[in-house]
Amino acid sequence: LRQRRFLGATAGGLFTGLAVLGFFSYLPTLMQQALGLGPFTVSLLSAVWAGTALLVALQARRLTGRVTAPRQLAAGFLLSALGVATLWNGLAPGSTWKGLVLGLVVAGAGSGLLNAALPLVAVESVPPERAAMGSGANNTARYLGASTGVALSVAVSTTAHADTLREALAEGANRASLTSIVLSVVGAGVVLALGRRGANR
Image 1 (tube, rainbow, N blue to C red):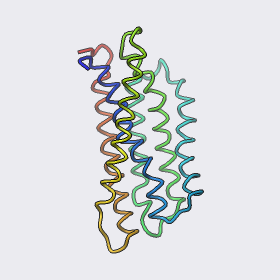
Image 2: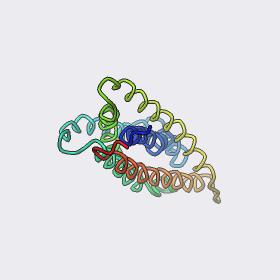
Image 3: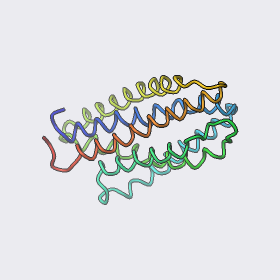
Image 4: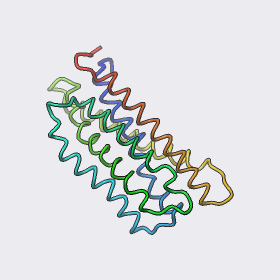
C-alpha cells in the first residue's frame, strides 16, 4: 500500500463497489417500491444497465495503448455519475420507467469502462510475479466496497420523510443518487491522483 499505483488500483476497486455496485444493486428495489413496477419490468431495466456495461467493456480493448487505465477508470466514474444524475427525480410519483432508460445506458457505459480497466490497472500496479496478488487485492476491495455501498444506499434512502410512502421513497432515492454521484467523483479524483505513471511512492 506504500506504492501509489497499487493504492490507486485498490482505491479504484473500492470506489467501484461503493459508488456504482452498491447503488445499482439497490436500485431495482427502489424502482419496484417507488414506481410500483413489476419484477419483469425491473429486470428488463436492470438488463439495460448491465447489457450496456457488457457491450462497452468488450469494446474498451480498443482504448488499450491510447488511454491509460487510470484515465479510463476516471472516465468510467464520471460517466456513472452522469448517468445517476440523469436518474434524478426519475422515481418521483408520476414518473414512468421510460425516464430511467437514458440514465441506465449512460451509467452502464461508465460501468463497462470500469469493468474493463480494473483488471488491467490491478495487474499493472504490481510486478509481473505479483499479478495474482494484485488481482486478488483489487477484487477484495471491490467486494468490500460493494457490500458497504449497498448498506450505505439503504441507510441513506430510508432516512427521508414525506407525506406519502412513495414520496419518501422518491426523496430517499435522490439521496442515494447524490451519495453515488459524490463517491463517483471522489473515486475519479483518487484514481487520477494515485495512478500517474512513475508515481510509485
